[in-house]
Length: 360
Image 1: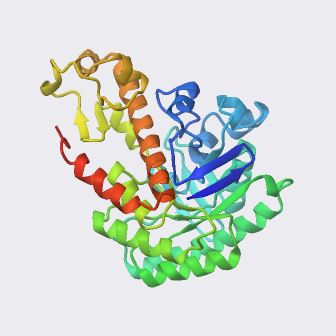
Image 2: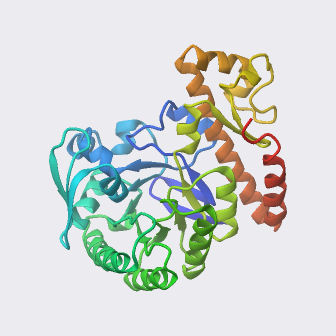
Image 3: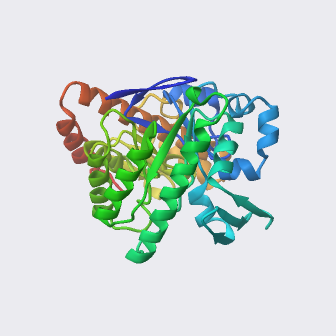
């Protein structure tokens, strides 16, 4: 357990951060997020830089005021999106040139510009620009990429230190190195020498098998200081989160609860349910009888299935809302288990019950 102090409030860790890529957690209002117990959300510098633009958000008073969220915000640097969404990108020591996936317009991002973008957003926690290498990757390419990412890390920290009020913000470094342990260690050593407020494990869940994801994440976490936040980027399912917490990670973000929720997949303590299935046509129980979220207090599986089958937007909102609350509660209970020195038993009990209905 830990406590992360930001300009917009304190955050207990481990913590799950709902993903608000474009200044909103899809289909969920800020009041609903607060009602779910969400303490911090994630935004994305790449998407917000392209639309609506940093100057507009700056004029609005920053992302917090623009979107009406008063809690802490972490912004991803956009590096992953540049390398996964953008087209015709050109990589150099200076930065990365790319064409927007929206309108084809050309842009050039440097480590310094990415810091300025996040400063314009008013981010509580900024992420450095890095290159995310997909799996599998040849060792010689990973070595070159890691050298570039480390150089960008130094420039990011230098520029961050020159901001008008750097002490009111946090900057996290990102550990790359693909699946090569020695390169992961080199990345950690270099980032620790530079010095960051927290450290993220990047470049996982990019095509590797599950066991390898856990292995790399756990190995990297063991190298990082215990008194700094350790953030596992972009993972995952409820079992993923508990496995990662057991390996020493304590900050998480993932689009799964909302993306899958919009497709009818609901997460419960007994597994995940595909509410579009005919199995639930006459199922008048709530999604999860132990939940207590708005969807579970007021609606049945049968009704929600009907909403999806008739393409009513309420259906995707209800399941997304339920899933966010489930994720937040799961991490809350994990924190309690850690505090009471019973995390291993909690994880084993969850995994045992979670498999009961999985995939129905």
